[in-house]
Image 1 (cartoon, rainbow over the protein chains, first blue to last red):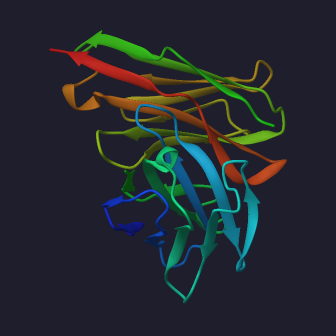
Image 2: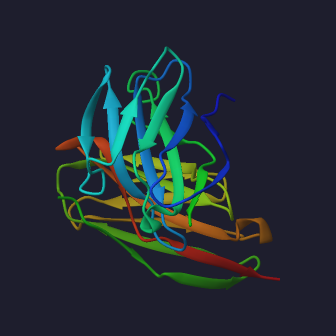
Image 3: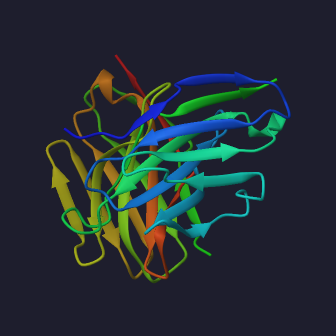
Length: 115
Length: 113
């Protein structure tokens, strides 16, 4: 079964450093998402991306965050200057509104620890 | 914006018994309601979903019911097994904000042997 893959699975970074989280969405999907989950809390929407531009973003997704689809397969989340409160699990997701409707599939996550 | 409430936050049931998790939502334009299961250290995995044009959907031991008038939907797991232990999240996709799903706060389900 096709799946969303994410790298790295775990990253530790110093406060103030830049971090790039990478995702390979399911190949025929057109919509891409980033969500985050602080330990023990619910999954929160960050940003959605379609047709090479941001469709929607939450208030969490401030100027420190950016997303990019640098080629035909990768989808990245960059945090420019990490803060302690950015420590969380970051999930990439993708969907294909065509064949499977609105079903959104999630990757296994990238655990970011800011120290 | 959409607000999703989920109850209970924790649920413990005897193996073989049924478990029910309930969610309410605020946006009457919402039209897609998935349920995700999250095991420790893993990403949310879709287990069942329902669209606004049906009231109930079943897949083996798992069923979801939707009451659009009351704006609530429920997950039912019958004949629970130890491997059902996980955190379950309801979610809602709003027609008025069709590019994102909003998650409930999660229910930690524990199955007692």
